[in-house]
Image (cartoon, rainbow, N blue to C red; front, side, top):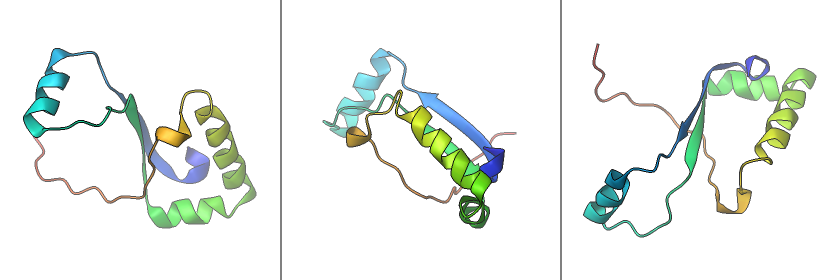
Length: 90
């Protein structure tokens, strides 16, 4: 992750909780839920710069190879996003 200029990498795994079904029903959600999400936090410019280096390309290849062990790419999503904190408790 450091080779990619990432500040943080987290995985958020869905848990088996009856509340999931209740929340989905309240919103009329009918799509199959994700098993979880992975979040890489960093500056877009640093990521772009890093992927242009040999070390960054090697890191991206290693990340992709590792993800192949647990991600079904045909049923997954990926995107670049901006975090907008609406509420934060101290």
